[in-house]
View (cartoon, rainbow, N blue to C red):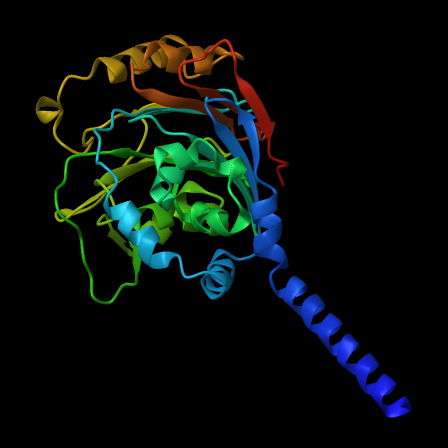
Amino acid sequence: MKWIRVLSWVLSWMVMAGVIAACVWAFQPLATLLSLRKLNDYPLYRLDYYGDMQSNLAKAEALEHFFASWEQAIASQPQAGFACSLFFSAADPADMQYGRNFDWQYSPALVVVVHQPGGSTSISIANPQWMGFSVQRAAHLDQLPLVERLPLLASPALLTDGMNNRGLVVGMAAVPERGELFDAQKPTLDSLMAMRALLDTTASVPEAVELLAAHNIDMGSGPSIHYLIADSSGQSALVEITADGFFQSAPNGPYQTATNHYFTDPPEQQPACPRLETMNQALQAAGGRLAPGEAMRLLQQVSQANTQWSVVYHNTSGLMEVVMDLRYDQPLTLRLNMR
């Protein structure tokens, strides 16, 4: 009968429209998850992140309730000791370089390129274990079905360091716990999410320091950390936040360094650190100006047996150099298009 054919046609189009609507609704999280690719066998992965993280996470929760197991997995992660090294060399305005070693337990890593809607694009390194993946699963992320990749949608907030396309770079290093500064009149940011906020919304060290100072920084998700921040004008600052206050240390010259102790302590109370001494001596001798390749060689000099990756951010050109597992003869190069 004609009305049956018409009804069938209408229902078919309604189903098709529903499928199309579902695809549009899930496009950004699916595009993000499908972008995952392996860059080397350590492994180091790359993920291109599309859309707003909070929106994507809400969609992921609607698709699959993974948050209970995610939080449990994060809570069960062993808290290994950190021994990170960071520096910023600012003397050459055409090629300023920010270097960092991430020294921890064995950690497959994820390069996350965030395509921020209407905002900054950024490139950063995240640790899949902090998203709830076991080491075994993290070593085979690209082989997991899409539904098991859903925790990757939280990757922008679980970074260790990163650079945006306006030249701001930020990295963190663990420091001894000294309590937290709390002001009931201020909103609170997780200590790692704070770095995401800097990359998404700031372009200079003064803007970044102002953003951090306007928030309570919650260190509860991991060890206490301090932040080395640098920008494309050559400014840098080390920000340390404890129960005693909010502290900002400026560089003494055209470079700045940081490891794993508080630099706001009096010099006589600061512990000896061979890694820090090596970086300071090399940067002082070079006048804060490093030739191509020298930043990675300096990271190699201060590397430890448990250095998981070394990364150099060139915050004027957008170049990013990454070495995994002390394989300094096998560097990977990526580039961020700068504004």
